[in-house]
Amino acid sequence: MENTKFISSFFDYKKMPDPKGEVAFIGRSNVGKSSLINFLTGVKNIAKVSSTPGKTQSINLFSFKNKFLVDLPGYGYAAKGKQNNVLLSVMVRDYLMKRENLKMIFVLVDCRIPVQKLDLAVIQLLDVYEKNFSIIITKVDKISKNALFNFMTDLQKNIAEVISKEVRCYTSSSEKKIGKEDILNAIMECYE
Image 1: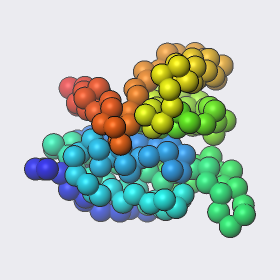
Image 2: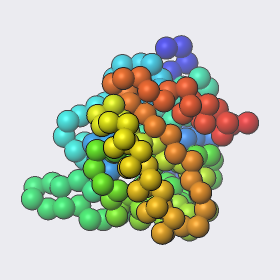
Image 3: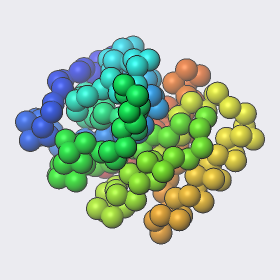
Image 4: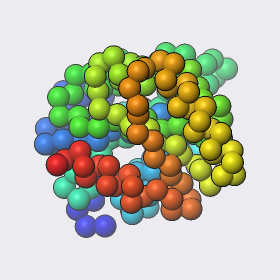
């Protein structure tokens, strides 16, 4: 698609170019961040999708319709028999807390598994640092409408236990092309 490209990978946010604003995607490993970026941009494999959790190790920057999207490394994956219980790497934490032109953070959660403590910890951290964030519930095509309703109810209840403000939630499925318009509208709103 026109004006859509992978810019580069970074291990230090200070070395990134300084566009007018960025929208970042974060979530557990294998939640579907790269698939979502491919779906939103309409460019297959612009973000590398892997079946191996924890494959994304760098901050990956993309341009899209003169906006900038950031694919962040996932958290919570098991590697070599050890669970990665570190909430966020120093690299990701520095990016999220110190990047001045970060307009919105989308926290992705997988509706096929119960709400995870790590996701709630990230949500709480973003709230404490007064970051602008929303939630994208991924892979909604994989469960029934009733199960999705129950998941969303449980998610809202769990969020209310860790922060006091309401959080906007979007549903998506890269496979079944669900939620693209709503998420793109939310991205565009960030730049207004």
